[in-house]
Image (cartoon, rainbow, N blue to C red; front, side):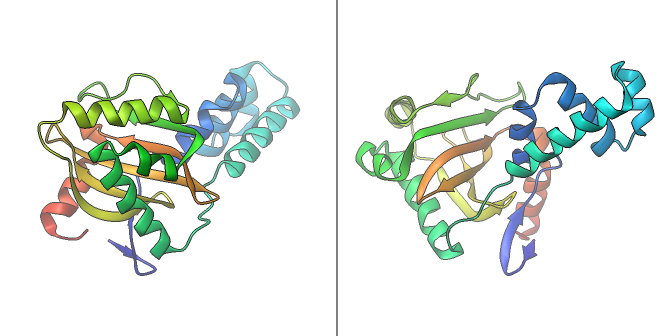
Length: 205
């Protein structure tokens, strides 16, 4: 799949939207989903939420603003992004703490989605020290190194498709600010990767 001469992978529900939704209040989330995503008339949303239409309009507006602010900002060139992706993959699979320390931000967080069907991190891993220990531990336990298949763009973020240590397909997206990786979004859920498997089999990635 090609878009503006870059390979682009997009999930049905984008990573950015999922992360932004986590930051909304329950009422903001409901108003945004019903009104903006499912196109439910405002008066019906107000009835469901048992709120005045004006209040629902404000809820949806605030939610929309939060989602917009959470959109990824591609601050580096595609060439630099590709270099960073390869550097991260190489360092993380080797458990190279020194190399990882140079490219991970102090506040880095790792999000992982296995869909309950494949092994994934149960909770968000936050902070550079915990993330470094995570990748060092994974590298020590590995019977073989994960294999990088393609460097791609995932939901506007630099990323890659790989085969992990358990022979499972996964995608990894990197959020980058000021030249450092601030978040990793790992998707291992096979239900969300069906289109990736098709594209790989067809040679269209």
